[in-house]
Image (cartoon, rainbow, N blue to C red):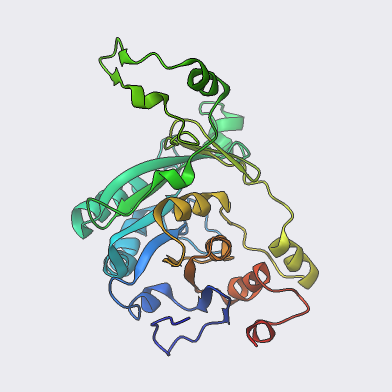
Length: 321
C-alpha cells in the first residue's frame, strides 16, 4: 500500500491499512500532498484553565495557535469533497462561573478566514463526566455540571461526500408499528407534508445529529452523541498495564470516529488524525478497512498505541513479514 509521504518521517509502525507517525503535526502536514485526504477526524487538546499532562494551549492563545499552525494545511490536504471533524470541549472563564467562547471563535475563524463550510454541528453528551468546575457545581451550586462537547463537521466544499444510509439506526417500536399498519400521509398542522414515501421500510431510521452511545452500542436522540466514555478495559489499556506505561489520559471514545468514518468515507478512503494520541481513530479505521495515518508528537503515546494492533509478544516488524 503506497502512502505518498515525505521520507523524512518514517512511520513508527505500519498495519494492513495504516501508518502511525511520531512528529510535530504542524510540520508533518506540510509533507502531505494536496487533496490527498478524504476525512480528517480528530480531538485536539482543548483550551482548559488547568494545564494537562498531554499539553494544551491557554484559552487566550488557542484560536491563533490552531489557525496559524494547522488550519490552512488541513484545508490544503483535504480532497474537494473531503471533511474535517473536530471534537472540541468548552471551558470556563478563569475565576468566574461563565463560559468561554473560544470554540465558537475557532469555528468562525475556520469558516470566515480559512474557507471551511459548517456542514453540521453535533453534540457529544458524556453522562459520566465529573461534576466540574467543582467551585460552581458542588460548592456554590450555582451551575450544573458541564457534560457536552460540540463536534464541528466542516467541509471543504458546499457538497461534501456523505451517505446517511451507512449509519441508519434501528426503527423504534412505534415506527415499526406504523410501517405495519400504514402511515397517515398528508399535511401536518406544522405545515409539513408527509408523503407516502415516509411509509417505506428503508431498513432503519436516518439519525439526527444528537448521538447517544451506551458502551459499544449506538443510539441517537436528536443531535446529541451520548457516550459515557467509562471504558476501563480493552486491548490497549491491558497492554499499558502489563507494560507499566501510562495510558493516554484523554482518549476519545471509539464510537465517535466510527460514526463519522462510516458516514463520510468509503472502504479504501484515507483518514487522517493530526492529534493521534493513543490512535483510536486508526484502530477504528483499520476495522472499517479505511486507509489511515496518524501523527502524534509524544513518543510514549505512539509507542503504546501499537498494542491496539499488535500482541505484546510480537513486534510490528514481525507482523509485516
